[in-house]
Length: 160
Image (tube, rainbow, N blue to C red; front, side, top):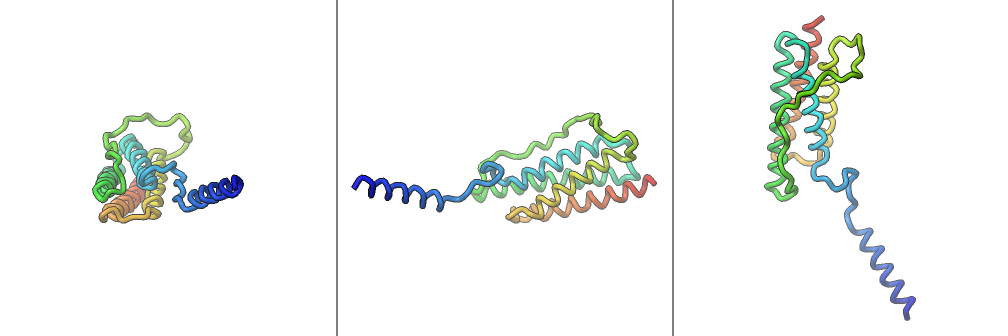
């Protein structure tokens, strides 16, 4: 009888654990792709703020689009919070001041612009893979990122 009870308890525990949803790779963090996109956009913003010159006005346009994308993601998380899918606080939007990384290639022509392009590309990928629409803010952020990328390509062309 004891073995039967133990077997039933073990079977119940095993079946219960199989029915529970698995935790995401982010350790259960709410909206990990959105948060990763925010971090990438913040890095891009820093690089754009620290770029050497204006690039015919395209750097400023890219910076404005990046800030707009950050604003849209702030609103996306607020939308998710209102709908009950997250109780987390907002996104830090204050500019961070960082110096040129020591690891930048000595002969690289546009290190900040190239890093910003890379970060914006990462944010774009994360938002394209995000599962929800976030009240339309995900799409608006994607459009802003794509505009920023276009502006940075024009910036490099302008500097040739």
